[in-house]
Length: 415
Length: 109
Ligand SMILES: Cc1cc2nc3c(=O)[nH]c(=O)nc-3n(C[C@H](O)[C@H](O)[C@H](O)COP(=O)(O)OP(=O)(O)OC[C@H]3O[C@@H](n4cnc5c(N)ncnc54)[C@H](O)[C@@H]3O)c2cc1C
Ligand SMILES: [Zn+2]
Image 1 (cartoon, rainbow over the protein chains, first blue to last red):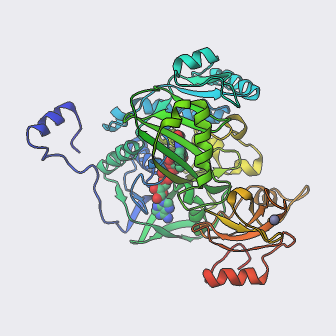
Image 2 (image 1 turned 120 degrees about the vertical axis):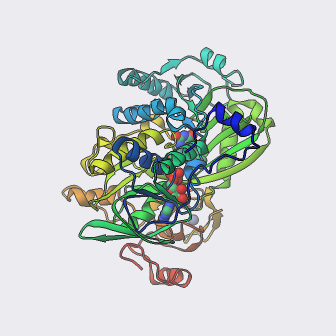
């Protein structure tokens, strides 16, 4: 792989950009791999990357039914934060956030990580108490956050309306090192690095059946033929229930549509990320100037990858009362992704009823921020066939044992 | 857009008139049952990509709970039926079979 650098740009400029390589190969599938990862989203690609980087396992295929990064990884509102309440969550999300700080250098690919700061607005007394509690928990976990008052919120976000018609802004939980990253670039950067290690990323290759014998997976059937493997990783987000059905077990999660929209590009007006959980709207401004807006989830099982119209109205209503200038914006695009939601709103990273089959799923509405940490933990799980410290608490057995990692109360519903 | 017909009052409405109650025909396990049964009942879900049997409430109408058979990929509704049953009636199974031959869902199909 030719490295990207300022020198490379100069060199290519001098020869009409004729020397750029393809970022990744598109090989034909081999008959067999040590490890097959199903799903070339951020988590699947990061899992493969850390399998190679941390454990030297490179005979790996990543199978993708569409195009890499075309699932939720390419559809999210790119918010990165680690201000969760429970210790296991803080550990894995902070691991991910801190990996994001240097990921562009590690991958030699600019993912445009922008630690511009994230505010979660407190708009009820209940939220004020909740976020103060989270700030204390974060202090003990070594995650830097603070509870700030309305004046400081206004200073950070001049376009905000503190005295909205329904819920005045009473303060907020501020994580200065939270922010955003370019979502596609995260997928592309990991893909390029995986391909460089000799791994095969096979797009347009849908897994249609899981082959097993004596409680172990032997391989998968795909739209491009049968492929055998020693170990299988299922990293398919909203399609997890579907894959689990092929493998013969059920999961503690359901798939729903979550949507987002972006406005026309405007001049810079807000340089932090704001999340308003009570009225339910999220806003940040992309480098292109578009206002990026996170919407709501549908209340029913759904694989349609679009989402209901009435959520657009609800989201825009929430934003107009919080940021009145939004009422003058034209919206450019709206889309949806299928997110996999668990009962305690925490992911599942762990073993499955099939001995050599592992799963990373259940990130629901908030797994983009977790990609480097989730991949790191899942690689360790697959390599050692046992969960490491980062994901030990996230196994599916927590539901039978009643050890929930309850982020639903702590975060409401949040990205 | 998802359109449902309430089997009680016969009103046809779009989704904001109804409230989803999730997977239908769960067998309830209470105190004294095994951990595994309890886990299956409380947390494990079919979550199919295709035919789904589910509960709905006509929240902004007659207020009653009912059942629906629906495709989660196309939002096509095969039929709605009474809440007073532990399995889909034959006419609903037939309606699904007509549109999705060979469908399966738990032990009913
Ligand atoms: C609108 C929206 C906004 C969001 N906002 C945020 C946010 O601000 N911050 C945040 O942290 N998170 C956010 N999320 C959540 C985040 O996007 C996801 O949790 C995360 O991207 C999941 O990554 P993944 O790699 O697990 O899944 P995906 O990126 O969905 O990858 C799974 C891949 O598996 C493939 N696949 C599925 N079935 C098969 C099969 N049978 N064979 C082969 N391949 C298959 C899919 O095509 C897909 O590419 C948002 C999600 C949505 C939809
Ligand atoms: Zn009714």
